[in-house]
Image (cartoon, helix red, strand yellow):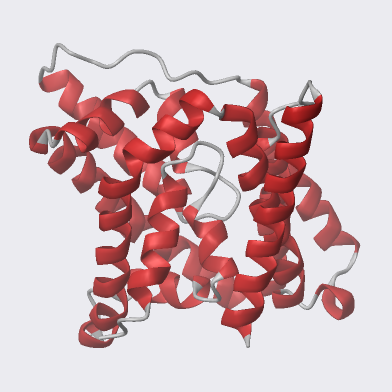
Length: 270
């Protein structure tokens, strides 16, 4: 077992509950994105034991983080929304240099790759125009609700492993984010199991698609990914803070997020 992945899973899980931040983005920062995709895609192959040793510790870390930090992050966004967003903004921007380095952009990017980058940017920034809101917790749980939760989990996880696109934000667009987060906080296992099943199937399906593109169109795929992450900046950016105190705290947290991303990225890539 690759037990080092537990701490990586903790980071990915704690970030994934934040609308606008993608766990796939953090996987790139941690230097495990391609291995993550390959392990999920190859889980049912003859090398399943090898992939399991990678995924189990990562999964333990992610699930632990989601249960432990869901309330904490909800509290931070309730009481200090702008300041918290600025920290994550720094985190997202700090990922971009590692993506560009991974894609060998200096030597391999051509005009078509920059066009793909712009397309990726437009896709994610366009989601921000939709201005999703959390909506209300679904209290009357029926069969149709479970179907919606399963489908939302499937769609959310399908984009969750794509850097730059937040699965949490997609779930907000579908109106199930507060319901799923509330179920996690209150241990409503029927909702967790149904949504979790959709998430698991979505992970496997999308990982196979991404694996195909990484194998056959590596540079182009990373060009799109970079565009998606840059587009995420427009979603995470909370606006200009007002008041000297808020400005100072927001700037410091932004710098803190940027430093954390750069330090973590250098440690992992080293």
